Image 1 (cartoon, rainbow, N blue to C red):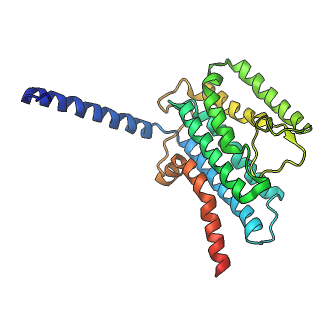
Image 2 (image 1 turned 90 degrees about the vertical axis):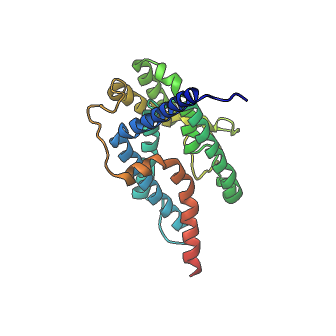
Image 3 (image 1 turned 120 degrees about the horizontal axis):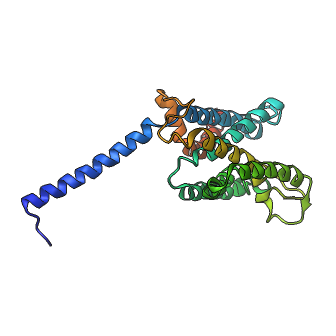
Length: 258
């Protein structure tokens, strides 16, 4: 074992302190240059999602006479999901490791598949929003290399294929991720690549147009958000997504037993 002299020890300590300060500075810059408008949109999407799932749970598990597919609740659920998908495409432009994060989100989706299969049986989640977001995050490095005209074309094709696929009925479940369903298919959460890829591509196009040339938080309509709560909700959106349903169901169970 090498014994460091006083001079060498001081030099090593200075290098360590310098690296630590650099890490703190980098984290501070990330926090300082967060885009307030993105945090607000993500927080709004979280709130709408919780509201929609609460209505669904009250109807499904608490016996409350409320139609979770009524226009208002359907609109709230779709706006929440489309906002998440749009922000995912937009935020991928800021991500240093989109493939790693995509894998994490996809495996969280697979965990939901296992849980819902055990609980919901026929309506379990095969390819829900987390599966979708995970796949698109992993593909995002490819999308960001495409020119804008090709992204516009891909978005349009995604919409057309999505609406056409809805009219097709297959005998296999292997193509569910692409929007091709089989007869009798049901799921409590289903977001195939087509047509929803278009919303992610819209986010990528917005990033290229308004954010790519302003990497340090100086986009024309960007602002710094002072609310720590909204920033926290935005940063913890995946965790909130994973835990909010068990919490809602636990509350409903407790209330039903009172």
